[in-house]
Structure formats: structure tokens, C-alpha cells
Amino acid sequence: MHYSPALLHIPDGFLSLIVSLICWAITAVVLAMAVSRSNKALGEKQVPLMGIMAAFIFAAQMLNFPVAGGTSGHLLGGALAAITLGPWAGMLVMTAVIAVQALLFQDGGLLVMGANILNMGLVTAAIGYGLYRGVSNSSRGAKLAVAGVAAWISVMAGALFTALQLWVSGTSQLQVVIPAMLGVHALIGIGEAAITVAALAFILQTRPDLLNEKSTAAQGSRGWVVAGVVISLVVVLLSPLASAFPDGLNRVAEDLGFIHTAQSGSGPLAGYSVPFFADASFSKIAAGTIGALVVLGLSILAGRSLQKKT
Amino acid sequence: MHSDAFDRFHHGHSALHSLDPRIKVVVTIAFIVSNALLPDGAWMAFALAWLMILIANIASGLGVGFSFRRSFIALPFALAAITVLFSIPGKAVTSFHFLMWDMVITDAGLLRFVSIVVRSWLSVQMAILLVAVTEFPKIIHALNHLRVPTILTVIISFLYRYLFVLADEVMRLLRAREARSAVVAGSNSGGSVLWRARVTGNMAGQLFLRSYERSDRVYNAMLSRGYKGELMTMHSHEYRASDWQIGSIVFIGILIAQIVGRLP
Image (cartoon, rainbow over all chains, first blue to last red; front, side):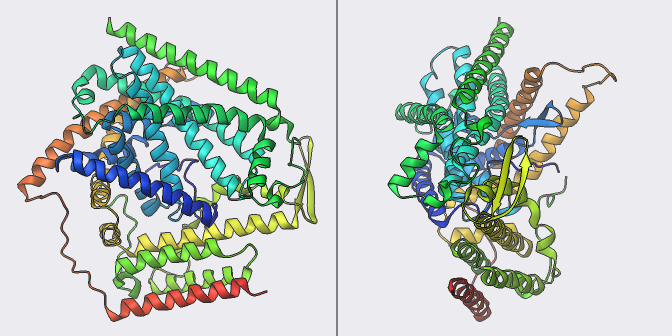
């Protein structure tokens, strides 16, 4: 069984105890809300459905396609799960997937599972559903385009959160981990966006009722749009900032006293001594190019699916 | 695909196999927390923790090197910690030239890096042992007893139960794609990367529909067998004296490791 561990699954030992516990606390609060909402909204029939949908996300992560040079793209599924199942159910489904990956396959740790659920399950679902909800009454093309953008941002958000947690734990250096994680996941995110859009287009074409028949209770309120947009904005604004000015973020963290000064010290990698990654203009050019590529890819995909319809 | 294709459980009748799953889950988490609490460079304490893993390996009847052989899964992630080698100020241990930078590995950086990797390596071994000596449904049941919400444990049980069925479905989809993808040697087969991604997306959509429709059949089949919204178990799950004894021994071991790790 080819089952490839993704870069976002943090193993035990890489996050400090404090960071792990804070992430667990946030995750527990959000999951408690998800559980109470789902218990109210879902009948006993929906629970087996969610279980099988969790298996679906797990299995869908095994689908891959060759990109170039032996690498392959595959799905993480947070945005897709939230769009097809609703936000709370999507979060529970992703939590189950991440829990089984950690418990059964040791893909991701147990103490850091809270962080992994937060990065790959909760944030991705909130962004995926929030942005999609904003256009749920719009045209098919708009829905697909927004779903693609949401899928891409959700992967970037997961990468950004992981990088920040590694940095605060004193495991990675900010000026390296942020550009490295965001750079790799900007590409992974394009695969995620393309698969999510194509899968949604397929479902909209064959069984549109599945996406519309959700009871209003299983659906999220308008508040999700705000949550999704706010988190996306944080990611979109913080990522270039953190890539371009890691020293600034380091400085803030030092002033707030939650990171040891020793970790941002004066080694050869400190400051701007890694010109390739830390150069602000390079980061901006890269971000601009990637953004343009994403928009281009999405418009091609949207255009094709619209053509097909007529 | 067989129903136990994803199973990590190894049959046996050892003391660890018969230990109460709740104790096993709690002890595993306590061990991992203990590793996270140990300060950098507490080599004696790390050695003690490793000794505990070796003893657990022997007690499980799976062989001394069982968890060691599978413990390298988390190793690629060590890449994320590699920058601490150079970033923490300290005495230079060694330096080399990489592209256009002079890289200096410091003693403090090396200490931190090795500590992170050792912590991770010890923790993952305990997690490997846990699933090797406990059937997965029992772990889920233990989580239920440890106050994990029922809806989550039920979803996890379904995921575990039907994963191999859907993995079979994935295999069929991949085989169908393979069968329709002829390659002429020397020429570029198929479409662009985006086209390939779209094909994969269609497969994901197809998988979604098949899963959705299957869940209907599963639910009906379960109703006809008396499903009332929660999963039943025939295990009584009562703590025995030996459960408390083994649990206490491990906790004492963890405590000793913590004290040793903090000695000057």
C-alpha cells in the first residue's frame, strides 16, 4: 500500500510541551463545539455516513498524479470535506482521519496531535467552508473558482501554522522554515486546488442534490464566511510579511518573551545571511509568480468546465 | 484487499497484550509527555527511556528490536530541525562550505538537534508498540472510556472498518486509469499536469459518490442487525490488580527518568 506521509504531520518531539498543550486546548474547544452542534443537527443515520466519508478522505489521499521528476501531487482534503459535508462535520471527519493516521500509522505524533488537527483539519475546514459559503448561491463557475482558491489557501494556512509552531518551539529557524514550508506548499496547494475543483465539478455535474440537500442545521451560518475570510486574510497577509521580514517577527516574539533569545542568535544563518530565501524582493517575486500561476490555472479549469456545460 | 490490510496488531499472549487498553493508552501518552519534558542533553534520562522501551519490547514477546525496526518513519521530519545546528551560538564543532555559505555547526546546536531527534525517536517507538500489542477497536474503546466524545470514536471506528473497502475502490480506480493510459516510448503521453490533476479530481469525485452510496447500504445493513447509534463491545473492561501493578511500574520508571534528567 503506497501511503505517503505528508510534510504537515508533525511527529512527537518536534514541538515543545507548551506549544503542544496550547494547540490541544484550542483544538479541544473547537471540537467540543463541533461535537455539540453535530449531536444536535445530525440524526443517527448521518453518523455512519460521516464515518464512511472519513474513510473516503483517507482513501482519496492515496489518489495521486505524476507532476514531474518522480514527484506526485495528492489531496489533503480539508477544504473538500468541509464543502461537501458542512463545516462541523468536515472538522470531525478530518479529526478522525488525522487521529487514525497518528494512532495506527504513526504518521504524526500523539502529544502533537492537537497541533496536527488544528493545522490540517480545523483551519482548512474553516477556510474551505467559509469562502465557499460566501458564493454558495452564485454561478457554478464562481463556486468552482472560489473552491479552488479556498483549497490553495487552506494548504498554505496549514503550512504557515506548522512553520510558526515549529519556530515557537525552538525547533526551526523562522527565516528558513517559513519560506521553505510556504514555498513547497504553494506547489502542493496547486495540486490540492486542481483536485478539489475537479472533484466538485464532477459532483455538481452528476449529483448536484448531494451538495444542496444538506439540512440547514448541518450547514453553517453566515458567520462562517467571516471566519473563513478572516483566517484567509491572516494567512495571505502574514505569509509574505513573515517571508520578507522574519527578523521583525523574531523581534516581536523576543519582546513578548515567548521565545528564547538564544534561538534567534547570531549564527551564520541568522539575519539575512541566507540571501536566497530571506531576500525580500525574491520572496515578493516568487509570491507574485505563484499567485499569477494559480489564477491562470483556475481560470483555465473554470473555463473548461463551463465550456463542457454548454 | 483483506480486512486487516491496515492492521498493525501482532497476535500474542504476552503481559502487554493482556494489559488493559486504557492503561496502555495512558502510559504511552505519559511516556511521550515525559520525553517532551526532559531537558536537552539529558542523555542518562534518554538512555533510561530507551531501556524502558527495550524492556517493553521484550515483555511484548515481539523481539528486542521490534520497535527499532519501524522507528524511522518520523526521521525525514528531522529536516525541519536542521537549522538549529547552525543557528544556536556556541563553540564551533565543525564547519564546511555549502554552495556560497560557510556553515558552522556549534556544540549547542548539535546538542539541541540530537535531543529533538532522540525525543521523537523514543516517542514514536512507544506509539508503535501500543498499536502492535493492542487491537485497534480496543484502543478506540479505551478512548471512549477516557472521555473522547462518542461521535468521534464512532466515526473513527467506521473509518477503520471501511478503510480497506474504500482502499480497494481506490485500487480499482487506479487500475482503470492505468489500463486506459497507453504510453508510447519516447513521446509525451497524456495531457498537461493540470489535465492529469483534473483526471485525479474526477476520480476523487467518483470515489466520493461511491462512498456516499455505500454508506446508505451500510446503514441499512446495520439497522437490520440492530444498530442503535452506538457500537457495542463484548469486552467487560474491568481493571485487574496486574493492570495497576504494571501501570505503576511504568510511572515509577518515568519519574526516575525525570529525576535523573534534572540532576546536575
